Length: 68
Image (cartoon, rainbow, N blue to C red; front, side):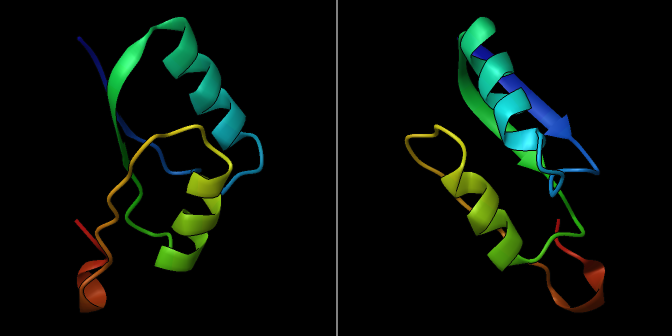
């Protein structure tokens, strides 16, 4: 089982979903954690729609703590 955990500041960049799709396909990733503390839930949902994930879970920010 291959796991990818990535704290990536630019998840809202246009090319990010295709980059993650390429990496997960090439490395045969079974579980992927993408951490972005500064993106809103709405932006994250839009990004996830462009990715080829079977399931996902989003943790929204909590006040000024900005997420995780």
